[in-house]
Length: 246
Ligand code: NDP
Image (cartoon, rainbow, N blue to C red; front, top):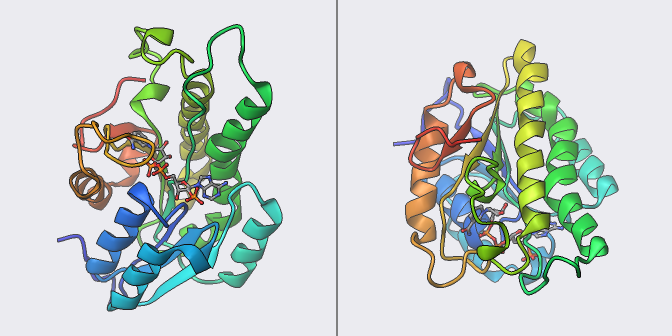
């Protein structure tokens, strides 16, 4: 369904945080659809599930070591992939803070870590790979954000989690704004940049009682991505294709 054939060449995706959770499911589904996959993770040698997906992939599948907070590693991967089209840059890696923290006891070091991973890394990766995306057919940048980054939907603060999720929520609200800037700045290069919320999904982060399993969520996200055009650039979309409240 998603495996459009661009002039005989299958599209290419680069995914961060591909060793578990939603990133692993993205890698699996794009590999199944015949895309070429650059799957990035911190520790390829211990990424057993991802190595299993790579072994079963029919098309090109490369696993790259990438801690998204390591600027030099991002530049080095960009140099390795220089000149190669990347149809879809998928910023998926993300973290949430320790939820037991309460207002009055916020750990600012941890806040900086969350912002480095959830906000600064997607920006740096977008800068590093913009030429690869611009050289592709689809020209897509997708940031995996969250409904918890929605200002409109924050009706509960610390009632949702004792911590109020100050770190996660601010990081996702900020990546939403960052993507809106990208959409404007990259439009003339034909690049579509959007934010997508995957819904609440049963992963290590989402927890065992979340509503969706990874396959269901990511099937939805792949459908949304397959339908993206430049007129969608700057939107905040839900995994079912609906627009998300900011
Ligand atoms: P998981 O906690 O299951 O996985 C997180 C992934 O991010 C892991 O692959 C992890 O790698 C990677 N990661 C964390 N820090 C870094 C880093 N510094 N460098 C490289 N990779 C890193 O989370 P999910 O799969 O659930 O989340 C994926 C994305 O979806 C995140 O952006 C999250 O915010 C978002 N999201 C998830 C929701 C859910 O309900 N699950 C809801 C809304 C949004 P490692 O194994 O090395 O730690």
